[in-house]
Image (cartoon, rainbow, N blue to C red; front, side, top):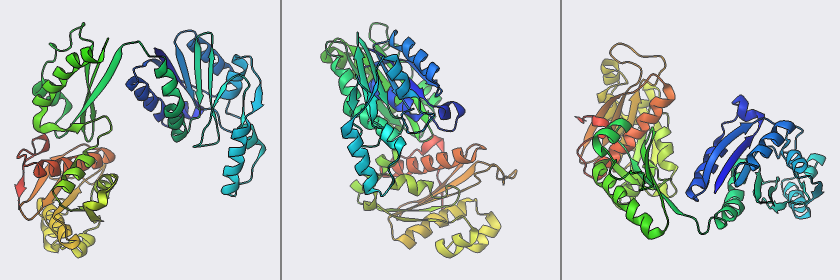
Length: 430
């Protein structure tokens, strides 16, 4: 089955809003074995919406739109599909009652525009939206399938999971079996991973095998996507399992885990919990980003005790027991300060592990001896006390992301007794 995604909204074209909906929808549809043939982003214009919809419906099996269902005058999607389907708007009473009750509970006045949100084309199937006020709509006529969804991400995702994916996958019965496997690697660059560690996969990727492999880099690591399709589950297993096993074996210590949504902080948290260890953070250049990633994981209170954002030097001195003379002599961005920060926070928080970050995030503040992007990452435990020196970019946010990723990967490697540090960095002992 082939599908088109149409994102509607001037804010998307102007760059005011990042189009995350299209990315999420494409991934969800692909996972369901539905080919996304094209993604369009168009403005809130009645003629444009009708023209693009008409062309899309004539070229693929299903079309999904997102956006343009709000209560304001510039939301034109509902009017466009009503005219395209030669229908008329009627009030969907269950939705109207739901909206009235929602507004009553929140003590918000109910307006005429809110009333109009309960209006839907007479011949559509209403997709009840318990996450918001704009119902989704499903049209099916003469083999053409059209889903019209709101642009609010949480509402779109709810309607996709609850209605659209089941409807489309039901029509996939009898077609090929498709599957995607994800491997998360960390601590190595994408090109080194693909060229030197994994190497050639041409024996697995013959035209008849219907297997594809892609490397998806991010600041926290490279996710390897392995996709395949076959006539049956058994045949797909026969083709897919060997390449997954081969990549696992080649990646070895760089393999952090498996799964599309798996995050490095989750991997580290699981190891900390399994080993009965606690951690605390002392952050300067990352400004709390390391602590944020660790605590993004549900249940992180079992191993994260706390953290200190010690941005100013006097905070490093008073809260983390960093020697004032060392800051004066070596500078705040130095091995000795990173080591003292890691030890100081572990003692103050009474944790098994202390982590620290100090660096020059940029874009200014660098010198010849300490350029922008230079960072020190400290580690302290009762068994080890060391720091890593890394050199990143001139981009402030990228430097914060990469420092956080290296710190997490450093912990993962220590907990697994992997001697090599991420990206070939060397331990500099206290």
